[in-house]
Picture (cartoon, rainbow, N blue to C red):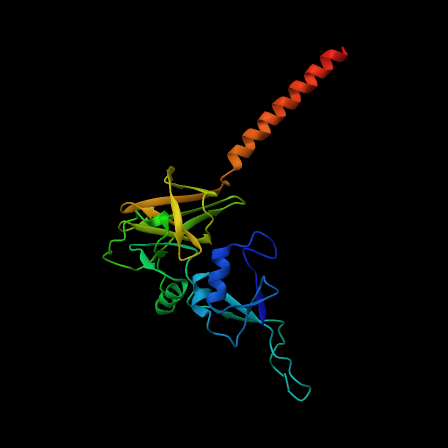
Length: 241
């Protein structure tokens, strides 16, 4: 039994969509924030595929003194690879839909190791997005990742119009996204993550940068405050002279 590090953590920044997804997917939680991955609980396995979990770590059983260990090294961890891991980012040619979280989890169980994109009905961010069926639903993994503290950039080779999915947490209005350098809109996809519409076949460089929705206003207020402070200091200095 090992803990699963969360993108939320034990603080006020927990992402509600991510929290609901893990809880409904069968991952056990302790203390209101610690997620537990258990060998005896295979129910969340499709969810781990979605979350790009490539390896599972487990503490090997401790043999009793009567068990001979000749010829076998004693290791601290058992490591097993997950063959169904989804790519961190990928392109798909169609956008599925669902009403409730339980319906999305059923889509996930049916898809298993085959990545897809789905948006929740009633979500205003995707109300005008085309959901036409594509000629192929096979996912195309992204490549050429470039990650910094504040940005995620990757490239997708789209054979048709569709959706580029990034398995990083969705927060409304707190990111800026560009397609080949041009501003674009992102939306919530696969319940807790980010998607952007790909308008036509071609090669696209997708770049997300974190820019909180009120950050520009905060910078302007800070600049005004600094200007007022400098003006006051100059006026005070002149009076003293």
